[in-house]
Length: 362
Ligand SMILES: NC(=O)c1ccc[n+]([C@@H]2O[C@H](COP(=O)([O-])OP(=O)(O)OC[C@H]3O[C@@H](n4cnc5c(N)ncnc54)[C@H](O)[C@@H]3O)[C@@H](O)[C@H]2O)c1
Ligand SMILES: [Zn+2]
Ligand SMILES: [Zn+2]
Image 1 (cartoon, rainbow, N blue to C red):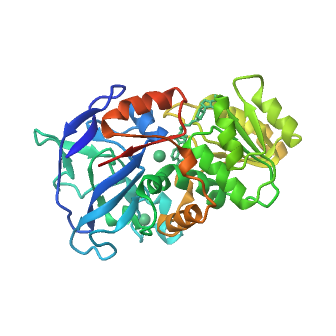
Image 2 (cartoon, rainbow, N blue to C red; image 1 turned 90 degrees about the vertical axis):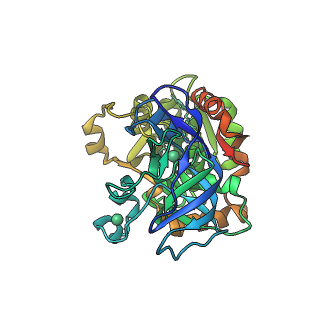
C-alpha cells in the first residue's frame, strides 16, 4: 500500500510502497478513507515535536474496518470509524479519574519485541505516529484508538473530528467552563481555532473575538460565530482586544503555538480570566510571563490537550452536532487533495493559505 514516509526532518515526505502487518490481539485493520492535515504533523516534520524518522505521520483520520484481531469485540468489518491519538488503557490513574486523554498508553505501540505494524519495501520497521499513521491507504490501530460513527456521516468530514475539531471544540466545552455571556478570544483561525470558536458559540459565549494575520479568514470566522475580528498583521492586537472586551477577555484560546502569541494571549486575558494554551509551541522553546500579572489579577493559564476528550463519548456527539447543523465542517475544508499532494498541502499550511485540507483516498 502507498504511504507518505518521513525519512528525515525538514525534508518533504516520500510516497512509498510499504507493508502493514495483520491485526494482533486488540488491533483493527482499516481502509483509510480520509485524513486531515494538522499543524502538529508539520511540527513533527520540522523537528519541533520529537518523533523519530523514518515514520508515517497523520493523526486525523476516518476509515472503514477491514479486519479485526483476537479479542476485538467493539468493531466488525464494514464499521465506519474515526481514529484518535488519545488511546486509553482503562485502568491507569488518569483513565480511572475520568481523564483518559492523559493516559500514558497513547505513547506506547506494540509490546517490545513484537513485529512492527509498518515496514518499508526493504522490510525495515517504520514508526507509526500516534498509533494511527493516517497518511497511508491502510491503518493498523489499537481498538482503543477508534470510535464507531453513524453510517450517514460522510467520512471526508468525519476525519476532521479526529483531531482539530475535538481539540478546539473540547478546549471550549471540556477544558474550561465558559458561562453564558462570557467574552472569548480565539487567537489563530486554523482548523483548531475555528473549532474552538464554534465551541465558544455553542457554550453561549458573549463577545467572541477572532484574531489572525490572514484577514481572508474573517468572513469564515463571522459565519462560525465571531462577533469581532482583529487583524494581527495591522497594529497592536492586544490593545484591540482590550478595547473590544473592556480591559481583557474572560477566556483566551491560543490556537497557533508561537511564543509571541502565547505571551499576547496572556496579555489579552482580563482580570480573573483564563488563558487556554491549545497551540503546541515547538519543544524546547520557552515563553516569559510576569508572575505578578497572574497573582494580582488572579489570572489562570491552563494547557488543553486533545480537547480534554473522552472521544468514544464526544465524537459521536460532534457527529450529531454536524448532522443537526450546529457544527460547521464543510466550510472548514479549503481543499481535498490526493496523498501525492501532501507536501504541497504542508507548504500551503506554512503560508497560512488554508483552513483545513483533507487527503481523500480512493
Ligand atoms: N493541544 C492539542 O491537543 C493540539 C491538537 C492539535 C493541534 N494542536 C496545535 O494547535 C495549533 C494550531 O493547529 P492548526 O492545525 O489549526 O494550525 P494552522 O496552521 O492551520 O492554523 C494556524 C493559524 O494561525 C494563524 N497565525 C499564524 N501566526 C499568527 C500570528 N502571529 N497572529 C495571529 N495569527 C497567526 C495562521 O494564519 C493560521 O490561521 C498548532 O500548534 C498545533 O500543533 C494542538
Ligand atoms: Zn492534530
Ligand atoms: Zn490509562
